[in-house]
Image (cartoon, rainbow, N blue to C red; front, side, top):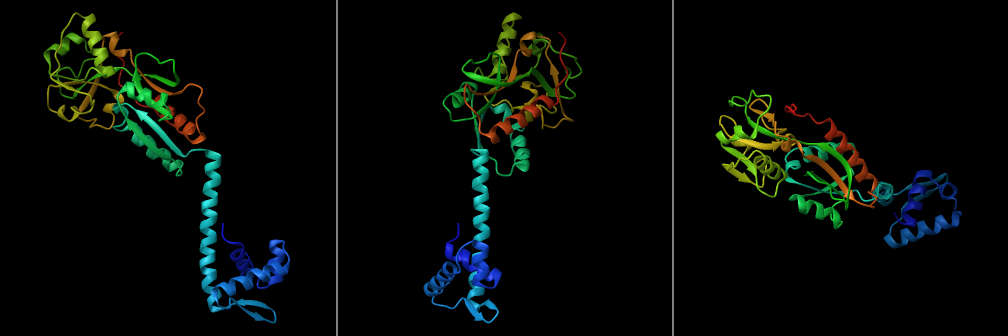
Length: 304
């Protein structure tokens, strides 16, 4: 990427003679000599001191050599990066997810992956479930993570991992020692739950309907982790997935599974667009992320 004249100049400086530089570059000595003369004419200085046993850099030549060497190294770095991108394809990994994955799981996964693949870049879009699917369907995101109870046939499921909803509370809560919790026990406590656009709320509403209950939550948000800081030292119970709870103060919070089967009918789904081939780096991140999801710690299972 540096000019022909600079390349021949550096070769003469390295070899100490035009003949040696010509042999190294596999060109005629006259071609090297013309490029050196052209450089000296353009700069208006003498770059080499002609000696009986070869050529030595002049003061001006030493300054130009320092610049040219730096330029050559930078050109090599840029060229190597371009070649690597050619092998890897697009190095920007475009992701979409629902907000439960954005608290800790995805940020930590991206940071750890970038330590392995420094060239990786990320663009993360956090949205509601239907918008996350649209991001992939319209090609704005390559991968998407979402909680789901049904699968979309327009999308390719790359990974499906069970992700029940848990009752999350402070460790000294009266219900914290239970192996599992039923919906009826939530009628006696302040409840925090997602709004009607979330899978948690959909499963909660179905479980209440099947149990013949009407429970009015004390706290409702489309942001599943919004009320978690309120739990320590309180009698509030929050409904949440285990990935959302990870990274919170484990010494103060406990996640108890539900006995109601509806609360276990949810999965983490990683999707791509049907028929689309991911760039190699995005495919590698998908496999990296899938391994982390399948190995992630889980709360105890509830009673069947």
